[in-house]
Image 1 (spheres, rainbow over the protein chains, first blue to last red):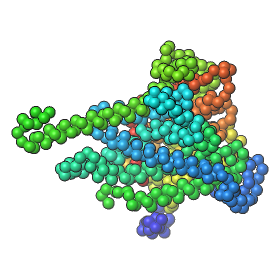
Image 2: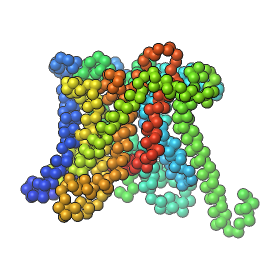
Image 3: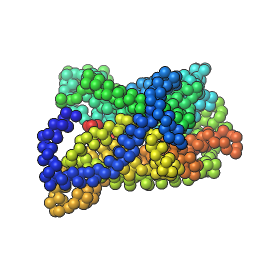
Length: 314
Length: 299
């Protein structure tokens, strides 16, 4: 924000408003911005503020909102056990799934970045699962991980695991099942491509210098590749956390939040209040708290990044 | 190997051969790891197709069949006969036919505004736009639903498509803006000297150069709409309006005339709805990669 103020001052704020060139810039700038601006105000800012208001009310869409003050917030923190359960499950899912996904994608990209023949074919193969629509992927994985007839359990039995997991049907294994499915879809997708782009940005000269110093491949990985990839790791972590915490479709289609609330993630809990019980006010409270959590986590990651993200050349 | 090394005259060459041997081992390990990963990624895809061609009795046996005894192509026909899957696919296509022009037109206009004009408040709007990416969709969900409900727009495609005609979302705009910024300003300036209006510059100078970025945006929009579940799920409750994604889930749960298991049919339906995406990917692979590179990592 400080830079913004400075820039405005430097460019001569008053001058900006008066000269004809500037008037023209203002006119066309705003003219072309109009569609987005309408969307921003009408579909984002307006609804966002309205949902903030709703979070202090009881509202079922059909009758007008009824002011409750802080009741919804009190209920959320003290009288809704599923609030904590669903938050915990969401953190479990994102906390395990996102780091595994980011690290996995990074290693796939490193393998693909070797200068070898035929790698384009591998890259295509890795990318394919990310194209499968989530709903289709759920249908597939529910069958692959079917407790009795799933081919994976049949293999596990052949390997000597006499009592393999019930996967989606088992409280303890439902979230791991979703994580496995998410990894299959996500590891080779855009995240891996982002890592490949990051790898291509590492100057070859650094590897040559390391070779002259007698570094092995493992040394190079640890002291050149990974440090120089930290900005990309960070970027993917931030996006991954924002996306991972909002997990909905996979769990809703696969298990509808079950068995026994095992996959009732925060967004499912919110959905139930909004569209099953028509507690729109309380759902808005849940939504605003969720936004607070996600924004805080993002800011926290930005802060933390100063300690571990390394920008080459700065 | 050892014999070769002994015959070499200098230690330098010996080191070279040693390094070459190490490289060969490294390469073998790399290929091995890549192949294992490739099998893990490819098997579920193979399994979708294979099990979509089996009978449910083959699927529900304790002896897994990697291949159907006789490919049951009739399973695919059964899908279309059991549920209006063709209609649902057509609906999904219709939605993308509305949204793709929307994001191309309004997204380019917004990106043009951010990339080429210098106006009061621009930086604030730009930061706000990027900020929208951080806010979970749930925050605006309820008021948006109430809005469309009161406007009697439930069971229409308006709620699902209007956003694409209002800029198309922060990510698309950002991607297009990055691309416009990479086009030399001299081109605009030259056209300006010739008396071209800003709209003329966008239309005549920039848009033709933006084809790769626009293709990428169109593809991303298609993928997003094709995959989208939640919006169609809450805004559409008439079966004939469903999209393929919502329809597939519906098919998972509705009672059918026969009480036989429908795993094979579900797999066929999953395969059917994946075909358009894979076809698109095969036809335009490079744009998928370009989208990522364009969006730039340089936020």
